Length: 168
Image (cartoon, rainbow, N blue to C red; front, top):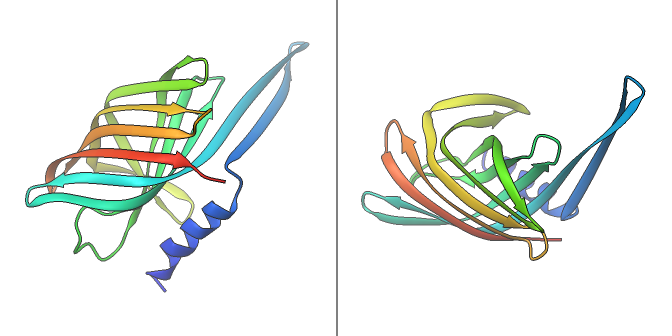
């Protein structure tokens, strides 16, 4: 059952539409403001440079753009740091500032404290911050590129790259 849950989670995500928009309109002192959050699902290849060579896996990352705060949040599903790792993790990097140029969102941050998602709850994961996160997401082509370094308490520093595309 434990091995089936991540597979079902990935399947449920793939069934959802590629683009999910939520508009929240509120009234404040007679003024109306609109917040738009846009979510995309991407599937691609993550490569983690381990001490004994590169570890490659197929991963799904959900990209959520918050147009009001101009931040991007990344939820990485199916993450493993080693072939022998018995379970996969769902981790998120939240509220990373972005710069938008037309349909391209570029983002970077020196240190991101990741969150593990367990039963719908986000739990800080300080044992593995993501260092020098840098990425680009293109809403027109659906292309997502990431790079950074996981600084894991047990496995040490592990450079990571990810390339994926949005799916429908």
